[in-house]
Image (cartoon, rainbow over all chains, first blue to last red; front, side, top):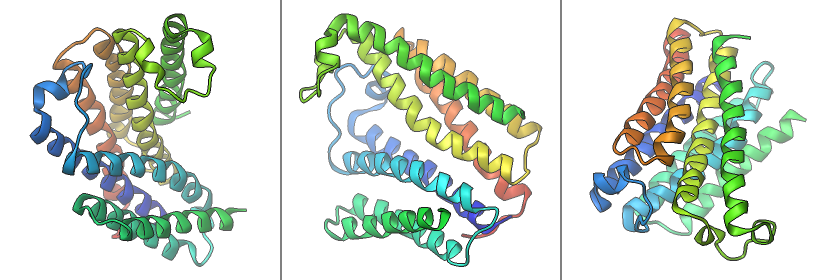
Length: 126
Length: 138
């Protein structure tokens, strides 16, 4: 399988893992009954659960941009595509870890690396 | 069109349907003046609880669809479609369709169970390409 595809698959699985981490953190904070309820008056998630929630939302946006670029390039990837995608994946993992750990500034720089990698992939697609 | 792509197409149409299901009561309750405005304030405070639930259901679906769409196209382009992926894709669609009334009518804890079914289906669709075509580390 073209490695670009496998990186996309791994990022998808990483997103799944992040969702699970967020679910468990939220369960610990507000309890199962709140989460499984109608969430009408759901309290705002704080701490680790809140950070993972925001990281997860960011993951979704990153995937929405990353996937089309990969799928456009995967048939005939330019030489730099694989490394760029690997940098993206590493940045996304670093991003979620930094967010979870509450590390500021560096988190944003890591995000920027992933974002730049995505932009570079699109640039290669033109 | 393959089973997986058909399921994806219908899942995308489901987003459109869910949006319409939300937009009608939201506009009736909050009024078009608010919905058409720049929404500097949170207009959800002006709609009824059932409509707010429809909104949460829509957001959840969109977030899920990003992952499902990527997974289906991945399955398609890697040629790893199989009975398993077809089942996973249709199961996902069924779960997302049921998720809407589950949220709207407050089926607790069934909404969460239904959500989990959709979630696991996505995981299957991501693992199958890696497994059948050869697991390559990123």
